[in-house]
Length: 118
Image (cartoon, rainbow, N blue to C red; front, top):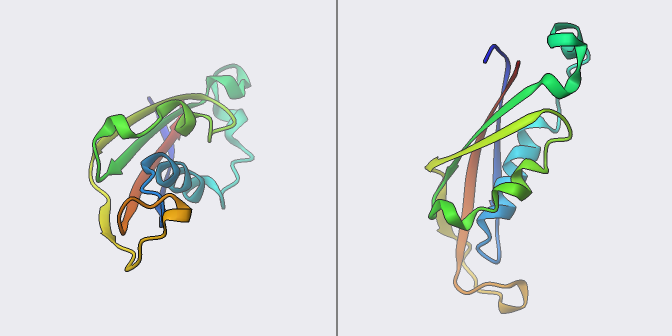
């Protein structure tokens, strides 16, 4: 893969201990303030579907707790692959809110590195 851009993001699930929500937020944080107007000019055949998006997530819980299909759906274009590695952070929110889905006071923090290229 020829990498053109690398974008970094962080996502947090404050209540509910949902690693997928934190991962999706990390991806949205990584791509949410970027525009790549010239990307089509360098993609094979000028086709946005030939863009490759490689996502690496640092997650502090077992990888199977992340719904990879939901993470992939964050990206509107390209061929998306997702790799989950140990990382991120678990810390205390200081409060348990059962009405928000909390089973404990843990906050799940996920880091994302998003590589875009062809």
